[in-house]
Image (cartoon, rainbow, N blue to C red; front, top):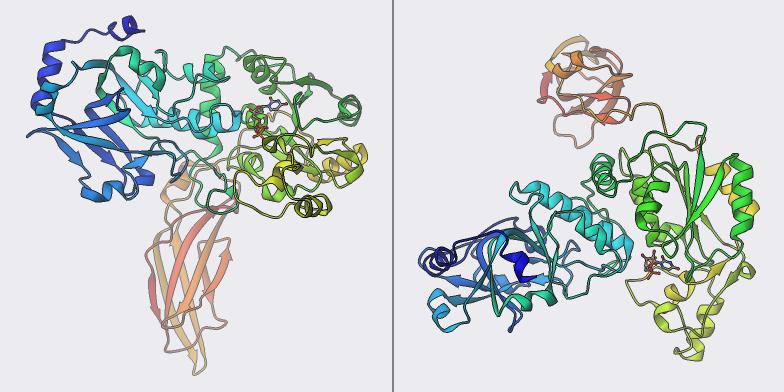
Length: 539
Ligand code: UDP
C-alpha cells in the first residue's frame, strides 16, 4: 500500500515547506452545511487522533470562515444523506508551527475525494447514496478525474459491493483503517471533502416518514449516463439483441423476504407475456452478470428490497414490478417507484401487495433486525399481529415494519396478473421510439396588447406575440400558449390555453380597467416555457 502512494512522485521537501509556510487552504461551495463541498490544499489527518487537521499560517485560507458556527452542527455532511448526525465532517485547528513537534507528515500526492459511504452493505444505499453522488461530484471538479483517489472515512471494511466503487477511478479506494499504515500524520496535497446531493431522489425517514425528496433535481438522463458508464466499466455493453428475444427477469432474494411460489410465478409470467423468464439473485450471480441480464430485459419483477435499484439499468420502455409483503403499503415505501418515475427514465412501474394473510409467513422468533418481535411485550406483539397495515413510521428500527417487511410471500397469481393488466399501459419492452424531448420553449417574443371599449359595460383586449426564438429550430408535436389575465389589484387571475399567436378576449373584460397579462409557450402539454415580461393593458 505504501508503495502505491509513492508512485506519483512529489518533492517531499517542497511539500513540507509549502505546508509549513502556507498551512491549509480551504475554499467551499454551498451556503449551508447540507449543500457544501470543500476543496483543500494540505488538509491533514492524524491517524492517532482520528481527526482531520487544518494548519493555520499567515497564508492559510478558510472560506467560509464560520467561527464557532462551524460546530452548529458541522462544516458539512460527510455523506450524501442530508443532515445525519453520524455523518458530519469537521476538522481540528493547529498552528503550522506545531508541525515541528509532530510526526513527520506523509503526503498523499493524488487528488483525493474524501467522504463517508452511508451503508455500503446495501445495494440501494450503494447506488443512491454513494456511487451516483461520487460520480457527479467528480464530474463537477475537473481535477477529480480517472486518477483521483477515493477515501472512505465511515470506518467500514470494503463490503460486498467494493468492486463497484473501484470502477469510479483507476486508483484503489482507501479505507479509514488503511490510513494508519501510511503513517501518523497524513497530508492530502489536494482534496475535496463532501458529496453533491444533486442526484439523490429519496429520503429514508430520519426526521419524517420516508418518501421522495422534496425537491428532486435529477432526471433519467443523468441516471442513464451514469448507468452506461458503469455498464461499460463492467464490460456488460453488448450488441443490441434481436427484438423478438424478449425476456423477464425475476430478481429473487434467497435469504429472506422470499417468494414462496417462484416456479408458479415464473410460469404465469411466461404464459401471460409470451416471454422467457430468468431468475437472478445476488447469492448466485455476479453483479456484472445481473446487470447484463437486466440491461436487456423487458420487465424486472422482485420483492421490495435494495436489489431493485438495479432498475436503473433497464432499457427505456421496460417495466418494474415490485411485490410487497402482507400489511405493507406500497405508497409508503417508494424508492424504486420514485426512481422509475424520474422524468426521462421512461420506465413503467406496477406495485403489487399481498392482501391475503394466509399467503404470508412471518418470523416472530427471529432477531429484531430481521423482523423478530419476541422481545416485545405481549400486548405489543398482539397488536402487531392483528394490524392490517404498518402505520407510517420513522427509520430504522420500527419493529412492526421490520416484522412485516421480512415476511415470505406466496404470490396470488390471479391478483398479480390483474395488477399487471391494469397497471401496464403498453406491452413492456425496450422502446425503439426515440425518447421524448425535454427541450423547453424560450419566452414568447414581442408580446403586445391592444384594447378597445365597445360600450359602458363592454370592452375588448387583444393580446398577440411571436413564437419563441428556439421554436424555429425544433420539431414540436404540439405548440400551445398560456395566457394569464389579472385585473390590477385583484389576487386571482384567469388562465387560458390558446393554439394561436393572438387572441381577443371580450368576456369578463371591463372598460376603463387595467389588466396585467402574462404569456408563455408550452410544448407537448408539459414542457412549460418562461413567461414574457408582464404586459400592462388599460381598456
Ligand atoms: N439481500 C439479498 N438477498 C437476500 C436478502 C438481502 O441479496 O435474501 C441483499 C439486499 O438486496 C441488500 C442487502 O442484501 O442489498 C441488505 O438487505 P436488507 O434486507 O437488509 O435491506 P433491503 O433490501 O430491505 O433494503
